[in-house]
Length: 263
Image 1 (cartoon, rainbow, N blue to C red):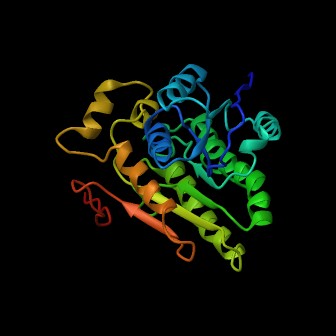
Image 2: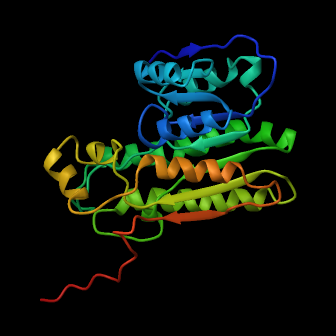
C-alpha cells in the first residue's frame, strides 16, 4: 500500500497540531471540521485518499494528508518520519480509527474478525501512541484522546472481542495517565454509545442494510458531530484539568441489567 503525502507551504504562525486517525468519515471527519474551526492545523490519516483530499479541500486546504492503514506499522512509521517540520510537534492525538465486525456469539464468529478488531482497536492504537508520546513528553505538552466505547464497560451478547478491545482502550488510557503523573500531558478515554451517521454499522454487518436500519430504528442516536463537539470541549480545558474518561449515550439508550435466561 502506498503512502500519499500532502504538504503545506511555510506559515508565519505555528498553530496547534492535531493528528486524527480514521479521519475520512464519521467521527474522524466531524472532529477534523470541529478542530479546524478552533484553528488547529491537522494531520488527517485514513485509507481512502480521495476522501481525505476532499475533506482537506473542504477545510480550506493547508492540512497534511497521510493515506495509510493504521495497522501497517512500517508505513505509519515512515509517514511520521516524513512529516514536514511544521507538523512534527503534535499537540493532540485523536486515536479514532477502530471497528466492530459481526454480532455473533463467540463460538460462531470468524477468527479473522477477532484478529482484525484486535489489530486495529488495540495494537494500532497502542503503536501510534508509542510513536508520538516520547516527543510529547520531551516538550511536556500534549493530549491523547482515545475513542473507546461503552462496550468496554457494559458487556452485551455478541460484543465479545469488540467489547474486550474497548476495555483494553479504557485501561490503557488510565495506565498511561498514571505513567504520566508529574507531566502536563493529558490522556482521555471518550466512550460513546449508539451513534448514527457513520460507517460503523455498515462495517459491522458487512453492508447488510436491513441489519443496519434495525440498529437505529425508532430511536435517535448520537451524531458524529456530538462526539466532535465533545472533543473540541476537551482540548479547550485549562492545563491543570484532565478528563480521565467520559461516557456518552443518546437519551434513547441507558445502562441495563444483567441478562437472565429462563427455560
